[in-house]
Length: 602
Image (tube, rainbow, N blue to C red; front, side, top):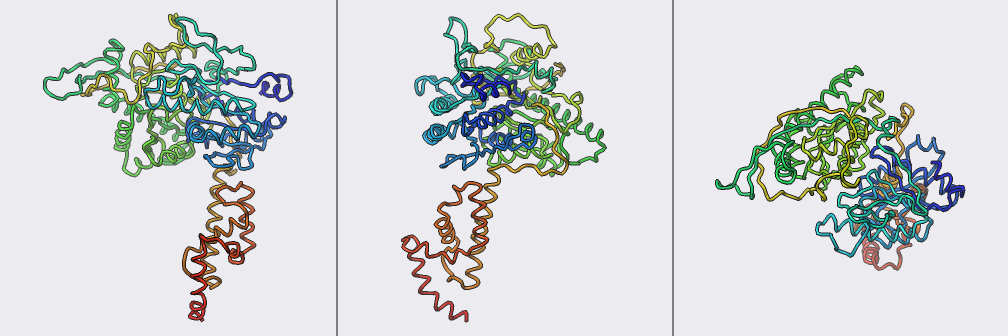
């Protein structure tokens, strides 16, 4: 906050880029609000544009600006909207939120906006953007090709912005590539990319996990490490002569030879069910204990009881986990309490919103990075049934449970519980995290800080190690290892603020209903002849009279349109369509039928 104030006053006038390296769950979504408020008030920028990696995060960004507590704390009145690739995405507000996909789909639109208005550009989870090389280079996977397209579209927009705010909790990429827009030291033999934190025009805000824990901004993590055994067939054949491998322990053996296929098998057979059961019953016990502490009856739907996030290795496994969890509950409760959010689900956004904002559902099953940035402080337990082992991905997953839940009582009564396979790669990651939390002696490093895991590249969701056929697995042991700033509650009974995009949709629906009501009333009262789509004609009349269709109206224009409809009849303005060939045929037909219809009615 002091840095942005210095920029606004001119004391740090040389700064154009801010890099906010904030531990996941440390409250970095507040930074764009602070930056936009002070820079706009100082006249240095006109608007804020916030770019996020996924559509589900757009509404969370809107909520950050609409939060009444932050509005009161900073005295700001800024509003932004979640925009699609339509003309005038800000619609008269202080800015808009979009996604990397949207920028890649319409780069000219967003570049023109950045050039037309002095903009503070917020690049959220910037580690998703690799520094671009040749088009198609090193893009053998669809995921890499998409990220490369995002970077090529974002770069001109970033260059056109007046100020840039880079946000990330993981300032390294699992593939070892540099991150778009960030300065680096010249490459050195045998070393990975190293950020140049002293680059001209760059200011760095750091907030580590250790700082966040010391200030009680995030929760400590308790790891439930589950070991197991797995057996599989090599070569993907089920014939009798196919070599059977195992049983092999997850927590022993060579990472490259046995751990990977053993983990692949475990996540799709009995071990996964055993780990899921541990997480499910831990969540059930937590919710029962919190109900008892509040003297709540069984089944009472209230906030703050704790929720379970299940991270699956692929969509097929996610659907299997969903059915397993629902099978452990009464039928009606299972359908209500357990939801699935993957790219293959049409209601994924609704499931995510319900999981974040309402007491039920209490369990969400998702895949890979669908959980990145998910702002759901009620998550208290995570079932880490994923084979991804890069540190940035795992930190993002853990951060879903380390946010302080304002509904769950005192800080000391909260704790994040993460169940995971006890394989060597996860054990290495856990040791590093335990060291940062001060619960372990710091190990001697033999590799650069960016090399966190033994394998250089991460395991992808669609990779199958050597085409194996999973046979069976089971859990054989469990051991525990202990290792967003809290916001004040709104006043009791105070309504939640409505987001601009939600208000827009509501006003457009009211406009459509008002137009349709006039059409029905006029046909029934013989003000106009029956036949054809009168509501369609009335919509055209409204657009002619007001000079703009409701799909492109700003909030004030939508409200004004509703006021106009309350005072005027569209039938009195049908002459606006005279001479329009699109309505000439229906007009002639109605003029021919109108005398006969009216006489018959009389």
